[in-house]
Length: 345
Image (cartoon, rainbow, N blue to C red; front, side, top):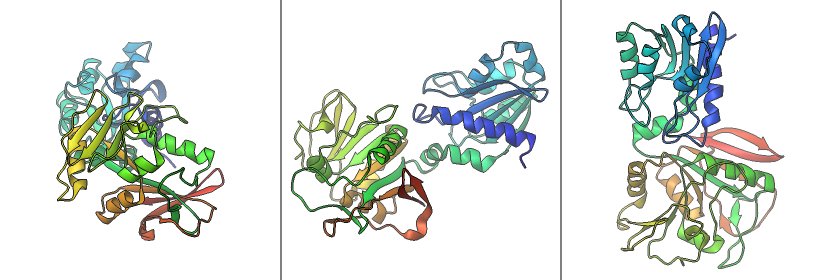
């Protein structure tokens, strides 16, 4: 059974998820203000550059005089630095809220305990670590990005019942292994990612748009590997006024939407790409193929989660699906009658 404090932090987590897909590179955060055992204010970080959860929770209260006798619960340590918005820890102090309960400490170097310290030095009672693991799980992408200095990497593919991604082909349309409803789930994952990567062959043969069409949300930055700049500019990837990064070994001038970035293809390009994406504040990426690119990430052990949709279709021959260690499986999910294996590192 949940304690009173766990109940309110659980509500903070629930609120925070409303910002998913809209707040990166900031973390999802929720806040609840409680007065004499009753919630009087709630808020969450809704969009990057806009007010933080604590600010929205305080704004939601009509009678601000109650704050002096209230507790604010927040899933993540209040910030202590000036960024897009003023420090939330400073606002809590100004509003004379006497007690703060925090789910987990912020790993971001500009916060990392400074918010807690600022509050305590001002005489505010602070408790840290209520439902800590659940609060960390909520912002796992943010934590990894700030601790490992690379994007959070999710692999995704659909494979036939006999373990193939596609038939062998040189042109034409790919075999459709996903259903209309599971395609919607893919677009949801796209909306939750900052970037989406495909290799040269997939870009050329499938001509994907890599946009969010079947789900509400922003389009991720499109990323393609084109070593020799062989991809025609007529591909969907280079259209639609959506930011696109093209990793290549050649010099090339881009435009407002397409940026060409040179890599050293004599060395492993994946670490080079991760460094560049980190510097560009791309916190999470979705790898959608093809098979060679997916296998490269698996071989380098450079992934955090994978979602493999299991189709009932048998292809009997074709492009083999990547191999992933079955020991890494977290769970088998069922969506719309389809099994999706979820793997975690």
